Length: 363
Image (cartoon, rainbow, N blue to C red; front, side, top):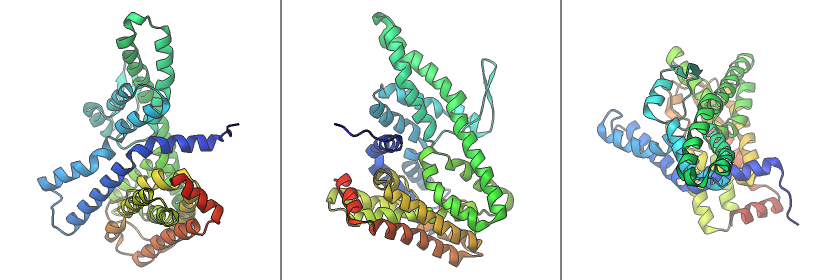
């Protein structure tokens, strides 16, 4: 008799299955972004040069067009037409629409206001869209006559799912993210350590659903208005925690191919791109992801106590540590070690049965 999976297991398996086909690509793009950051920091490549423009396009294209890539893998996972899904993802990233949304302009469709939402690099709106596409496609194919089904079905699916995504799914994620960002500001005013512990513990799970982008926007605004930001410092240890847990899983695995994937994910995480480590290594095995949350929380508390701040915007990584130079920098570096080591040791010191499960899942 087949064991019934819990809802959380179904969700995690589904998300992992969607991201697994592009894990190596995410690692490659993350490493390239890290190399480019090193070249820029060392003044080998100017950030305003055309060489930088080309290399940055290579490094950032996957992340910018992530909704379209996820549309394809999610459609394969959910059992719907992948090309229709990709077109819906393309609607969200259409240049004219994106430009209007980035300017904060609300668009009116048939007199109804459409909230401005930034979709590039987003996850949750396109996954919800593909989930809806499954059901819309079934209904449309069932009711349409055979003669017009082949071309009218995609038309109806694109219009219906596209509009629901733009009107509903995008704003839902935006509202949730904005609420979480406001909650963070309230907690930080009470206690930076508590804020660091909470944000450090939850930021990586938030990445799964794309809710972290609201914090990124708040961080950008803080730097623009105040000249510094605390959010980036508090989420830094969680990045290193992903690397620590993935390294521990790698050391416990006996599968050479999987160990290679783990190592590339660890390198990518050190460069500030945690998706390969999360979706390809830690999240599918659950306990390492719990270790990441604990490590991120412990390191985040130390980072909050340090009072460290980012002087300019950059995602936390090994090569962007100089961004945090100033008050509390030394203790901030310690907080990153705390995140890494905590997640590493919690994962590698799992009971033998748990470690064996991690190894067997990797095979």
